[in-house]
Image 1 (cartoon, each protein chain N blue to C red):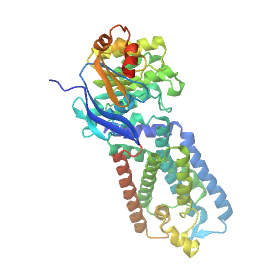
Image 2 (image 1 turned 30 degrees about the vertical axis):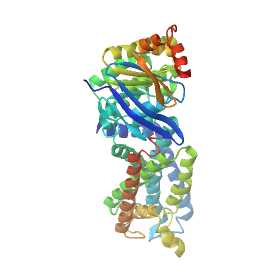
Image 3 (image 1 turned 60 degrees about the vertical axis):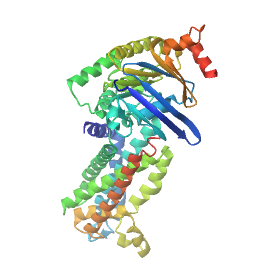
Image 4 (image 1 turned 135 degrees about the vertical axis):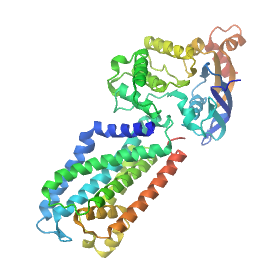
Length: 250
Length: 244
């Protein structure tokens, strides 16, 4: 267990040491989103009967959790691979399960810290409620774990920074932006409504938002089932890749 | 008969069409100071990487102190310290943090004993003054010594040094060798690859020469020098063996 905790601690220390970039910057970005969108739409839009800012904040918090959890595990792995320092965690007797758990927990923690930061700075601008706190915590953990795991896959798969950037820009960004962060899917045309239902991130954000306002586009139980299924599938894939040493052990 | 420090049997590895290791058999006894020599591309680093679990062989077995590196990898890795050839480091951490983390990866938690050993390594490798410096701030030679320190932090009985003195100045190199000699005198098995043949000649009891993935000469350093009567230096022997 010491090996696992050390790797977890190293990963936490890694993002903590550059907290201005890894925590403060995404919090600022989310606050800018809120200021711009709420300024433009607050007087005109209500979603599920909720003022727009109050609707938007949970979406921004969850988006920040997801993007930062992904960024942490993927960037740590690709950086270690490119610089060669990955050898320091491949030489010791750390099991592939411990390796996965350490990277995912640390990345999820960064996501949660950023999410909490976003919540703290944006709560001042919106009339927030915490209708179902357990759902909030559950979806925050699930979302952080799921995208952290996807980050491990991306970090293992990518050989170069631009491959990781492609993964981030062409998969993660569209999945998070087109997931109902800024809108209810019922405001979309029928085709895009149906398409959104194939986006697992939509369920994470919708379930998370349910925890705040007690209303959502789909049942939180459906969202939970989709989120858990996706997390388990991604975890199984990651553990298989790590066990085989895919792109880590030649 | 005691279990050898390292046992390699029938080790074969291909990278695409390139045959990096071609049925290598090798035993290194406990407490030996063993040299693994050969030109670039001979297979030395592949052999070391397979031993460390970084490369998965196509065929053959490898054991460290009797523990199979594949089926019993946790035990074998705990018994092995590897100084990699490339000058790699994690730019986020200081020298001391790097060593503390590396100890933790090997299951050694925070304790006075661990800290005392880290201090001893830092002193012995002349790194104490830089203990709290970020890795980025170190010279190439210092980074190389930190790599050596990282390999030693869990006190492995078998230490593999893949060109440990490349880029290290003469004075620091001598200090490094004094420390490694002391470890060998204390019973640690040392496996060394180097292109500085006088280092192998001075320190190694036994030497294997590799070429194109095979071992083409294996004997004590004295016998290798004697076998090529008239030659006084290992470098001359090396050139003859490689050309034979």
